[in-house]
Image 1 (cartoon, rainbow, N blue to C red):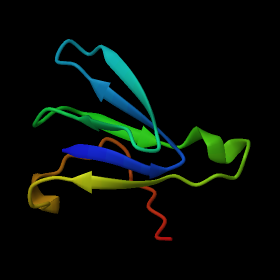
Image 2 (image 1 turned 90 degrees about the vertical axis):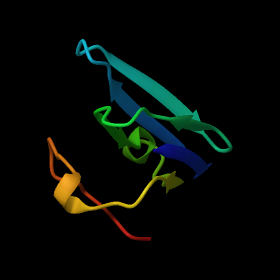
Image 3 (image 1 turned 60 degrees about the vertical axis):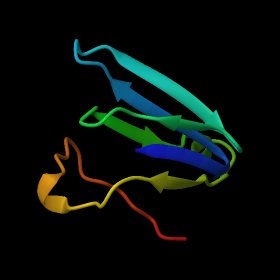
Length: 79
């Protein structure tokens, strides 16, 4: 999967095979690609302080809920 930020600030946590957490902080125009089967999560901390939303694109292969493992429930807000 590749994440491309259109606006705002996106924090993307990726977890390596040894459990190490790597956090990428992306702003408008930046992107990151994660490896297949790599655990990850993302959030927008700026809404706590500035009420700025983040908009980003997720580019990936076909998504099926059947092959998705969720550690926490997604909180999706469609804008």
